[in-house]
Length: 387
Image 1 (cartoon, one colour):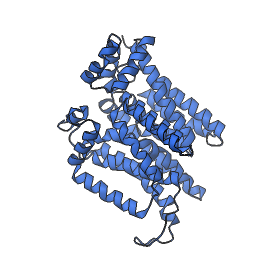
Image 2: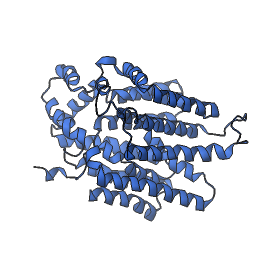
Image 3: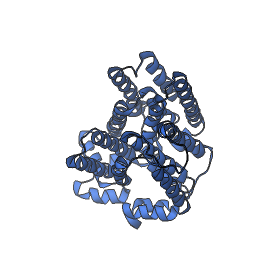
Image 4: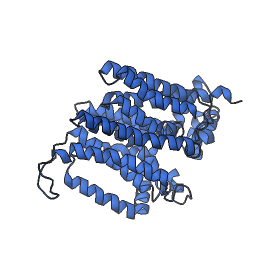
């Protein structure tokens, strides 16, 4: 686990020494180095590092090399993989059927696109990159490879769309990229809701409605999950098995899930305070007023609230945690964005240190006590260390 602690310490140290946030060139250089190292560590890991990678991704990659193209739909159904993912891995086997090649390519896609996302959208690439480690996303992505690729494609879709003029063809491109992500992990199709929240301005009514809806979903989570299940394929969907699962079909209320909930909610509360509450003309709950929130700020607030809602619903059904990863990246950019809006430098320093400290404690604790059980990434091994 030493390699993870070294990486976690290197990120802020390298960032501060090089003044990574000073200009775009330094931000680009920082992101290239940091996510390049992440890519390298991920790419050179043994195929036993990551629970899902070890249990089925690695083994099935070697199997698919001998499967005929005409038999891939059957193979996909048998292994409960999306068809697009199977075609993708089949293409990779034409270059190399060695599972290490698969690990290298997926690592480049995942960490390359996440690094690019932080470079383009984060006000503080040092903090966002550190939080990427502290939230244990680096661990999770070495585990849920297929969904991690889908998340990466969605971030690319959002980047392209958010920086476009939002004409009809821009919407078409976004939808196509979401569909591409969904052929790697079908749950990604739910992220068409990005379009809805891109149009919604953050208001008091929407916030209150969000709280009410979250409460109703928490109470009727089984009905809601079955509704979502029907969208993803109904009773024939691989997600149907989670309903009765002792591991994923029940809720988990423990210190880890509570701590993650708190650090996720922290971004929303901090963003709400500085972007909404501080700019209100009146602090009365039912006063008529418009919030002075920009479009990108509204979107980050909505995404962070949804991430919080998903983490809350884990208390009812743990599989909901998988939906969180489509929204967590926006939590990682809301933290630095909100902190940057505080006018007093002393306040920014205190908040930065608080966020670093609270999230670092979570990272150290999980790495030492639970990284192996939750993610299967401890102890770390290079591929040449495994016989």
